[in-house]
Image 1: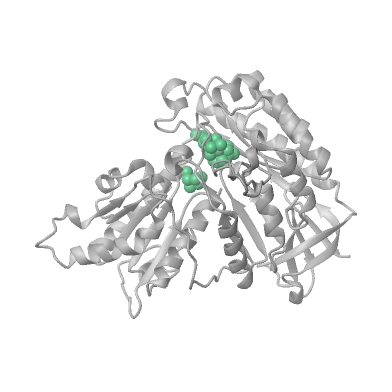
Image 2: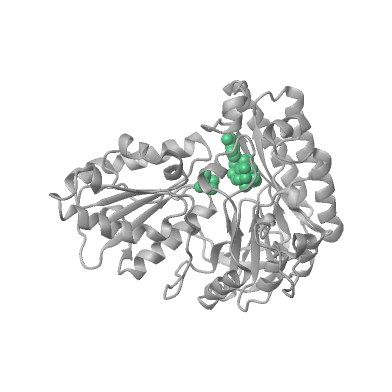
Length: 478
Ligand code: SAH
Ligand code: SF4
Ligand code: F3S
């Protein structure tokens, strides 16, 4: 989870000229980064240019996140900063889209009167049209009231339309690809099912086409996205008589089927997956990880908690034993698999003993990467309505730090096993601090730095590991 916030602060100068310019500020997860790219592509096709300077933009869009309150507060503060700019440049179009837009809808207009557009999580493709419509309404103030010179589109029945025909990708070697949208589970703490709606998996053919489109433009590393990505295809119809059976339930398409196809896309070198759910780990999925040489042998498989009581109150749909069985299945079929986990500390009713369970489970499973969050009740979720947020902030903080300390120790120990060993590294970039240093990742997704010529960018190299920390490794060309 990260936020792109390297843009310059807005001021009232407005040197816009030539083609209209778009600036997108992206908060939240990788899905939002992908969606922001889709939006930029749409606008470019309509004659817009993108700019990294808010000051130059004619249209500023905020792609927002609701997963924790902090994410929303940051958005409000950013949106607020545009108020003065808008007073001096009334032509500026300010839009809010994504998860927070979907969640709070009209309230955005109430809290931030200078916002012109609100678009939910399934309306990205409509945004250029919405901006055009807005301009039209602004040009006819006698026909449209002030209220009508604002537009809102948040219908969840809508489907995002992805069509990249005629677009160019300028993002470099790495790209995101959402293979599905939405989430059909209902973890009691989570806002995502509300903001992203029911699962819609895209077709394998469509995804292979988009992956090839990326590869043709120089993309070598593709991160596949889905909230429960290994449930991909579960919402598709089962094949009818005479239609080919696939690897999913009752012959449906599954993530394994997609991976075998993507493995064949020329130009791709690495395929990453975000995020898996223990309930959908199957034999055929594990086999596809084993068989597909381009697919990373690191899987984010969040446990969230190390206590059956807490997991039950979270409605995660598994016990620790079931998690163990799924993880063991993966390890049996892919012996060198590495797993990562997200954790929520201080969830409703979490006792000291429950929390210690998380410490123990992290250690037992030896997770290579861990993200720890303090429970934050989200409005209208089951946990917010039916359970109490009864763990004091100070305790949440302390547990957060304790679990981070355990994860650092485990990650350090796990990575230290690579010391003195030779690993294969896909070289992704040059170090910003020293151009002689190459940065890449192992097949397990672990960052490696080593000295080498820039000509190695975009190639697979072998490196011997000299040093390791809790977060990455350094070595030399083997
Ligand atoms: N679909 C993914 C996670 C999406 S949200 C999955 O099921 O694993 C990313 C992470 O944010 C979650 O894994 C969880 O650890 C954390 N998170 C979600 N809701 C939260 C909340 N209300 N408070 C604190 N952390 C939360
Ligand atoms: Fe949220 Fe649970 Fe769905 Fe993940 S699986 S997005 S945590 S409801
Ligand atoms: Fe945030 Fe929505 Fe992603 S709530 S984490 S931007 S799915």
